Length: 230
Image (tube, rainbow, N blue to C red; front, side, top):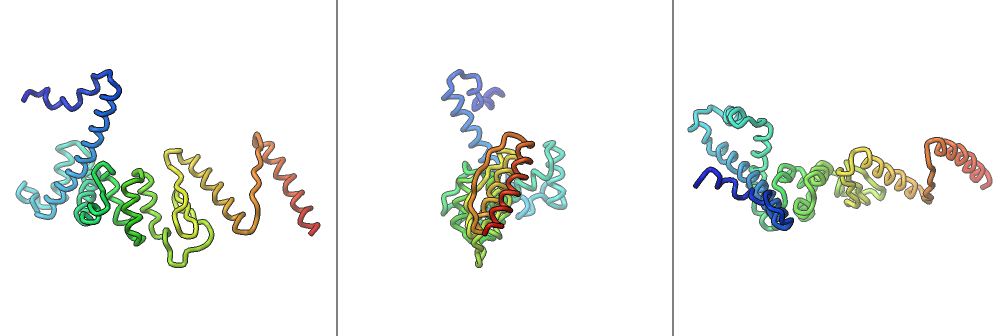
């Protein structure tokens, strides 16, 4: 095999056929997912069987530091791969039962155990397949508030997820950007508080900050008059 043969899977970028390029991109993504899981499983085997000793290292940490220097990669990334391997082996039976595949994104396995603390196993395994990495991370961070035994009737906002009566109702994608995400979550929070108090929601459009300030002054006066007439 010549040195050029290793690059054959990447030939698609020389093509002008969009379907061929698209297929090549998808295949490359699948290869990346498989590689991440394979690295995690390999690292786990070295650690669990103490194979680092046969390579002249006294500990797994020493081996990771050596690997980091040799491959010029951050050691924290190596430990993340190791955690992925651990999660896959620990939950292998359930992952297979619920149909998890490498294409669903092995990076999410790092957050699987945290997500499972909520106790609703079926929901967790469905979400690890269909959610993006970012959304699953947010989902796992808010696991303890997802299904409280005494689920409140009001709306709870945790991270970028909105829970209604203790159940996940809305996920605002972080791909919108921090500012826009925060804006829409704030709208939902204000609206839910108004409804909880028995109020009604009336949207009002103002064109700028000056109009907003003027409207608030008028609004305050009108509301005071309305309530004084009761």
